[in-house]
Image (cartoon, rainbow, N blue to C red):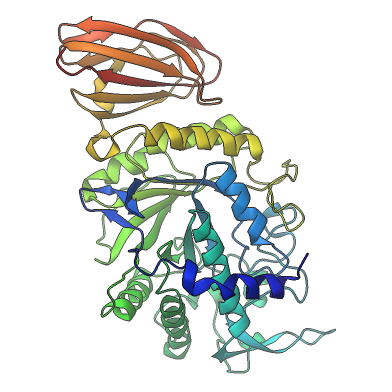
Length: 468
């Protein structure tokens, strides 16, 4: 098998041909901004991807990784740019792809000195590393060939001192004398010289990726930690937008808002079109749906390793008006790029082939709906859930309804529906199998559906038949 450099050269040799220069980048759908348009089709992004190190970790072979995602019916990955990295042991993650082995970290900037003994790695923040951008383009090209969109995360806060100690922007690790400041000030407007290096990287990355249709930019991962300021985030968004303002092809910009849920109060930069949440609750989608922006549940975890937990999170969020779901899948490592590593405590999350297949079921279910005409309508469901269960309802009132219930038991749902004849199908979200099909005639107002019993969770696809 060819080495990494040879594989990248092979991919890049066909880059001009394989890059879809005539295809517009993924964007908000013009008829329904809560959803996306990608290569001419209405799109939701659903995935269970590796822990963000596919670019910066030179030991990670992204070719089998993208083949695996495509095989599982998924269409998104999230990668960190390399302006941030982790170290072995960070957050109790075993075989963390964001924590490369010594000498295997690929930064955007030229490395002028290797670490040896007490001598630290040294980077030149005035010079960009050509091998980095070759690998980045090869990664985007390979992802695009498999129909996979890449969320390119430009920055990430320095959560702990040991992460700041390993960062090229720390004055100890570069030849530019930047930055002798607390880690909580790295992503603020307090240090103009450091800010300029950050903006230069943004301009370079956006320019290098201009030709790709399968990428969008997230300003900063989890900016609500580590002192990241809103003014700094707006400045980065402005730099992305300014870099592309005279280009025919302009890429989406995402902003990470909160863990769990938060109602967006402060205005985001007008160029921001995607709002991301982590470990999300459906309230995050419901509370912000009125903004007419695309909403994402961008990271999962810290809730055990069971598939049902993350499957339910995906269904609840996407049937509440979300369009992006990214499960953090710890079964992907540098030794298991096909996602076969065993996921076990204390790893802070789940993953694996079975969960990926289940998320593929969700994606197919959503794609079977006329999503562009649907919106969250939780008030349609009046009663009938199993005790302690949550539900989500996505509907085009009077035409089609999708309902999800996250907890097993017996459900006898009471829905408020207009008069008509309806056809319903209960679906097992774990397998995609149809559990029961039924038809009924309704005179209008509330109706109690036939009882359904299920072990873990269940979904309903309900259609009002035209002319009946």
